[in-house]
Length: 343
Image 1: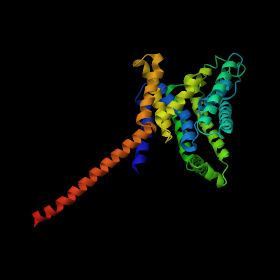
Image 2: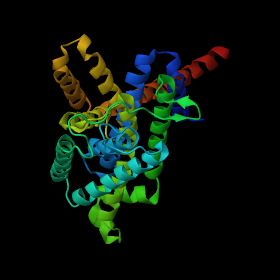
Image 3: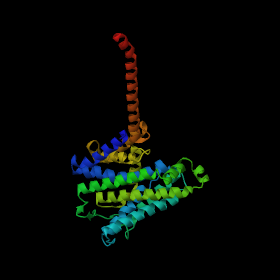
Image 4: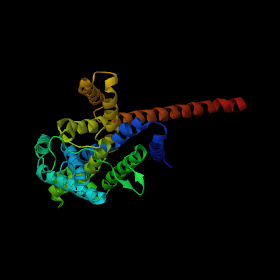
């Protein structure tokens, strides 16, 4: 078994045993929120790392899924329909995937700052739509008292089942991203990122590959949005406003765009700072604190915390290898003397 496999096994065992070591606050507000929010950030990391496309509409897609679940499972003030929760989840994930697809159709023919601005405009348009529409989104109030389902006697509104549900969904999304990147589609997507002109000359439809990537990212964001909805128990226009949109970007940058695990690392750092900033600085100064953390990470490690950890691991391995080579030379130089003493 390789060292990397052992490390992943240890991390998995630690996540499974995490509820045994913490109270309900750390279990749900730190662990559960990190996993749900990190899944939304994972959809952005997938687009950036493997497609070279920076989107600010991932929280918007998550909001589509969240609003859909709330609309079909927790109608309020005459707004919404009551459907069986499996059907509501299927509709929500289908709408999130469709939203990602439509956003991709608008954004894939642009690059860089233009993609960023188009997706930001879409995010702001959706925010104002939810704020002003009462027939579907219930306006400023939104939906409240949205509870997770009870499945086979397991109440996922309780802390422990909700954490393990979030962990299972996050692990499935992470594994799916890792698998997709090794498929022919994933390799084509990385080729589009590196040299779209060459991929086009080989017969690939570059725009179609990018649109499909947006649809996959939409499904991932939808799953994260449903977890966020169940965590908070409510959704409103504030859930999809400019601050949550930027929060997803900051979490992805903090963790690092080069590896999918960076989404969850960044979400963990952001969640911890968000929850405990009040202990170090006034609550209204939270943006200042997270901004300083963001600047520190970007300045000292442009590829995020995972990049910093990767460089630290490489440095440690080189140090150990250098020490082993030195010990080998010392052992080799001492052998002739030992042989003369024996003579």
